[in-house]
Length: 113
Length: 116
Image (cartoon, rainbow over all chains, first blue to last red):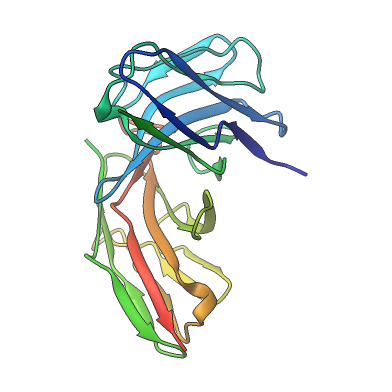
């Protein structure tokens, strides 16, 4: 089954404790992206990757890191989480940007206390 | 930069009512336009899309027409069902000639609740 998986689905952590949210897709997509969803703001792009070893900032990259060492994986790293990073996070993938459909993972709900 | 504005919600309807959710956009170049739907506890999934002016996207009884002259992509359905209750997001992806090629820009989302 074609899918994007994320782990964990739920995470509660404390300020400053490094964490990683994993994302994996099995569709051989080149384009992958991370979004955060906040009430009244829709989804905002954090980082994206056009291919292996090619990443770039989205609209809200501050406080996040990403890497793309393999085509299927695109982890999101919060090296020192803060309460304002409490949000619902989605990973997405597609064949490319532009008019191609993006496939979304189920989401990771992160709470930073 | 690119932006998408959706009608303010939430929207509450009775089953079989007509649905319209307004969406307007600002973009450079020739963007592609999308409607994504998010059911409770799930990720987003594509509902329909249109890639050029005057295209009509349709799926599951939903329709939207890409209107370049009014920079709009309104979502419509003639008869909603309880199972249509979800959050609906209008989005655009920057096209060639624009400054945000490949990136999805979302509206704020509209919560739709359909009562029996």
